[in-house]
Image (cartoon, rainbow, N blue to C red; front, side, top):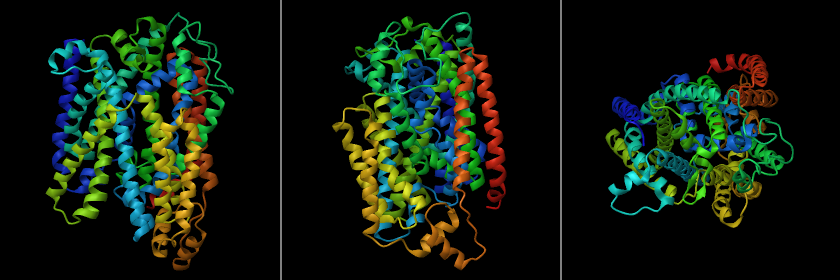
Length: 610
C-alpha cells in the first residue's frame, strides 16, 4: 500500500487538476472554437509540450519498458509501429499543409478537400466514423494500462471488502480503470482544450523530475555490476533474426518473444518501415495530435510545434524507460509479474516502482503517471467530442444551436464516449493486443484513401468513402481470421482499400474545379496536381508552388535519424556507456545542423508570410 506522504502528493496533484478545469471553464464556454481548439491563441511551445506530455502515457510507457527489458537497445526501432517518426513528417511539411486549411476537425477538412455533393457527404461520414472508432480504441488502450498500473499499489484484497460483488482476478484492472476514468471525465469535459494544455504542462514537469530521479537511482544500482542480459542485447543493430537467447537467464522471455511475433526481425523491420512511411504520408489520424495542430496560430507554428514534440518527449521518457529496465533486470526475482495465473511483462514498470522507488518520489512518480493517463485520455476525448459536436450535431442536427446548447451537447457527448470506451476496455485482452489492432489493423484501412487525398487531384469523395469502407471492414474482421501479427496482414488490407479507392474514384466525376483550385492554392501540396496547378496559374499568374518532394524527403530522413539519437542518448547514459552516448550526441548535433541548414532556413521565409 502507498504511504501517507505518497497519497498526499497524489491528492494534491488531483486537486490541482480540478482547479485547472474550473479555471478554464469560463473561457472554454465562450465558443465552440474556444472549447475545442483553445481559441487558436495558445503558443506553439505550450501546444508542443502538451502534445509531448499527452504521448507520455501510462500504457505506452509500460509497453516500452517491456520492450526494452525483452529486446534491449533493439527496442528503439519498435515504436516505428506507430510510427513515432510521423512527427518528423509533420514538422517538415505535413503540419503546415494541414494548418493552412483553417479547419476545426479532420472531418471538416474533408469538406474543404472534396467540397459538397453526395460523394463529399459520404467521405465526411466515413471519416467521422473512423475518428470515433480510433478515439474509442485509444481510450480503451489507456484504460487497460491504467488499471494494470494501479492494482500494484492498491491491492484488490484491500478494496474487495468495500465492493458489494465479486470481481474475477482478470477484471480487477478494469475496475480500477473505470474508477480513475470517471475522475478524469470531470476535468477533461469541463475546461476543453485550454485546461488540457495547462494540465499537460503540470504533468510534464512532474514527469521530468521523476524521470531524472529514476535514471539516477538505476545508474547508482548498476555501478559496478553487469546486466544479466544475452549477447546482442546492448546493441541497436540487428540481422534477419534477433538472436537473443534468454534461455539461461529468464526462460519466460523466450515465450514472450515468440508471442509478440516480431521475429524474423528483419522482415518485421522492413514491413514496419514500409507501413510507417505510408502512414506518415497519409497525415495525422483524426485524434488529439491533429487537434493540437489545428489549434496552432499559423502554419509556421504548426511546424514548430510538431518539431519540438520529439525534443521535449524522447530524452525524458527514455530516461525513465531505461531506468526501470535496468532496475527490472537487476532485481527480476523480486518483481511480482504473475497476474491472473500467468507472467505479465507489462507489470515490470508498476512492480519496479513498488519495489525500488523511495517514499515521496513514489508519490511524485504516481502523480505524474496518473497525469499521463488523464492527459492522454483528455486529449483523445476532446478529439472525439469535436467530431460528434462539430461534424454531426452542428452539421446535421441543429446547425444554428445556441452557445448554451452546444456546451450542453458537448458535455453529454463526452459522457457517452467515456461510457462506450469503458465497454471497449472491458473486452480488451491487454495493452499490446489493442495497440497492435490500432496501429496495424485499423490504420491499414485508413492509409490508401488518406494518401490519395493529399497527392492526387482526381481522387474524389466517392473514392475516399469506398477506400475507407473497404479498408475498415477487413480491419475489423481479419484479427479474428488470422492467428499472426496484425502487421503482416496490413498489405492485404492496403491492397483491398486501394482497389476500393480507385473503383470509387472512377465511378464518379472529379470534385468541383473551384473546390480543387481553392484547396490546391491554399494547401500547396506536391504530387499529381498538374491540371489543377495549370488552372490556378491561369487565374493567378503570380502563383508559384515549386515541388519540394526531394528536399522534404531528405529532411525527413535526417530528422528521423536525429529522433532515433534522442532515444539512444538517454539509454546509453543510464547504462553507463559514455562512448556510445557521446557518438549518438555528436550524430544528433550534426543532424540538427543539417535540418537548420536544409529545412528551417529555406522554409522559414515562406512560412512567415502566411
